[in-house]
Length: 595
Image 1 (cartoon, rainbow, N blue to C red):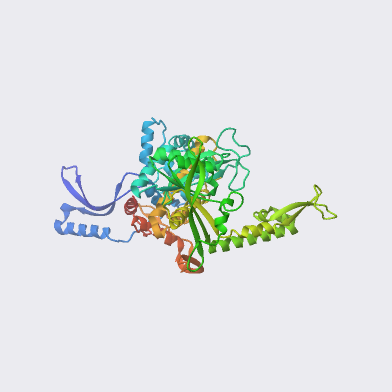
Image 2: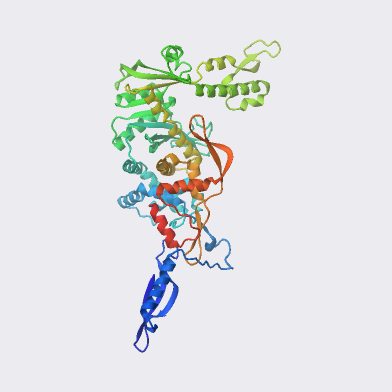
């Protein structure tokens, strides 16, 4: 821009000094300053002031175009200094989603209402921990060690501040979940006609469990003996997290459903709710309480053994199945009367729908898995070392024999043999599934469609455990544990919101983190930034599979997968920026568009 400065002299005269300047920020978050690009002299000394000013304006316009940038680099700049430090700006895309949830505003209200007296910002700490739970998940201590990396993010807090803040996070955990639910409803809509529910657990690498706290020994999903904590999680129809609750590790997962259903209905003001769950939560007590509360259910039913015996007649009756044209799928849907219990515990006759279906693809998969287990079982009979192999136990049996005569006795020696009879019995169930529902107006297609969405919650647990590194849990107090999982829950919601916005271009949370971690820059002298190339992984060619889905081949495409993913993320926000040496002001305007 053209700037005119009036300069006064000792004799009382004054002249107008003309120059072209540009604005810049010396550092992220600092007050703007101006620097001179070129000085032209005093206006009063010019023979033709109008022509002179036209020349100045012409130069200014030229500078506003894509004029070459001259970068000055000192030859004595050393490593490990601020001038060579890499800063990440990829987090800004996640921050934009985070800001849409208005979490900062909620935490500011909490600070005011609770008369928070800390010298640190709860909002800054919470945001930092949530965003870096996605980008670089680790312990709270390790996460704070990278606090100098985010571009333009104020990290003026200590590790002690972080641990103190965790107590406050636990205090507002439930209320913040309610707040985020309201924001999701306004942003993308949330009908909650039905919701998916499941339970998993997370382990702590400690020797002894708590006597009366959350960290207790229980049935671990990962077959570990460490103390665990149980988490119940609700997702909506879009696969977006709604609510989570923690339970002691020794709590049976069937006992978690009712407290969470009551809490979510009360907290979120819901009417009738249809819960979708797997067979682990299908107990007669849960079913009765769901119906007695005026709600509904869609749950899977085991077909093997005693629990599934009542459905064997319908299962193996080849009549009345509706079969697809190519014979790859068949089903039967019928009404069933059963005896339940009302709120007073009295028996009551009720009705529900039963869907039994068979899938050729699932049958072939089960057959292949059983074959693998049989091979392991056969290996175990030849070599005892194979007895530690996971999965072989399904088809081995142990008998006690006389080591010399081979006759079965009470107590001499043990012999492991392959249980072919059990394998043959299991083969009869290959590809068959059963789903029960209270919804009498659901068609077979609707039942499968609703229940089929349950994979979203299983995948969400995988994301929390693997991509967000939610376990092992390093914190120990009950409040800190609650705060840790609130951070993980919020991070999951941010990722799912971004994936929802990406639609058909959605990529995994792992690839989102990889792409955004590659978006880095360095601050050079003169208010110039140097942006690194966002890339570093070769992409593979894709092809259309027989089922119409796209699948990757083993052939490189010549493109960069990280760059492709980054462009997909940019499309969500309608931005495109790939200049290597932008001025800080230009780059700041680009980042402001994300909001």
